[in-house]
Image (cartoon, rainbow, N blue to C red):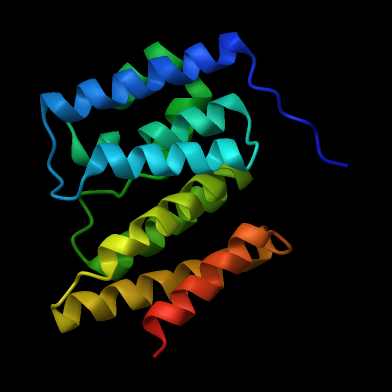
Length: 179
C-alpha cells in the first residue's frame, strides 16, 4: 500500500519558496535557450500530480539549475536541505565529460545510484523535454536524442516497472521517434 501524500499549507509554502528560488536563479543568468521556467514548472507540478514527497517535488522544480544557471549545490543544500541537493546533483550532467553518450551513461548511473526518487525526477524531466526535442531539425542531434531516450528506458525500466507514467513515457517516445 502506498503512503498518502498531503501537501499541507506549510509544505505548499516551501514548494512555493522553491519556485521563487528557481525563477530568481534563471532570471539572474540562464544558459539554456528553452523556456526553462515553464519546463521546470511542468516537471515540479507533474511530481505533485504523482503525489511525490515534498523534497522530490522541490528537486523537480530545481533539477536544471546546476546545468543551466550559476547556482551551485551548496546554495540548494543551504535553502532546501541535503536530500534536495543530492537529488538535483544526481540529475545534473557532468560538464567535464565531453562525449555525449558517455556523459549520458554517467548521468543515468548517478540517478540509479541516488535511488528511486532521482529516477522519478529524471523521468519527469525527460517527459517535460519531449516537446522541445520535436523541434530539432539537425539529423545528428535528433539521433542523439533518440539514443538518449532508448538508453534511459533500457537502463531504468526495472526500477520503474509497473508505473503508469513510465508506460506513458515509453509510448510518447515510440510515437514521436520510432516512426
